[in-house]
Amino acid sequence: GTRWRLTEVNGTAVSTTRVYIEFDDKAKRFSGDGGCNRIAGAFQVNGMQIKFSKAISTKRACLDNNVQQIETNFIKGLDEASRFEPEGDTLRMYAGDRSVLTFKRDKQ
Image (cartoon, rainbow, N blue to C red):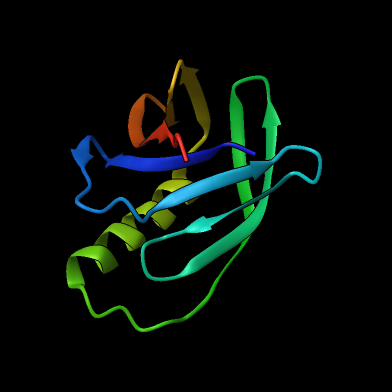
């Protein structure tokens, strides 16, 4: 039920607050917003390992090229992520030892 706002992609701060992900632990599903399009899919967790699969996305036009690039990198990061590290209000996802996505807990 926690909404995680994307703050960094590949170590670079993002310029929008619209991008987020939420996890449904019971259903093993995720949903969120890439900035232009809604996303959803499945995930599996084994210890600190994570694997995203069956991702789907709406196909709305994105008029802001910067937001479109963030969305593209966000979805690519989910595809690449192999492990995660929660630390307080921060959630980091890694591809091997490389940080690909950083989120902050949304205070809603």
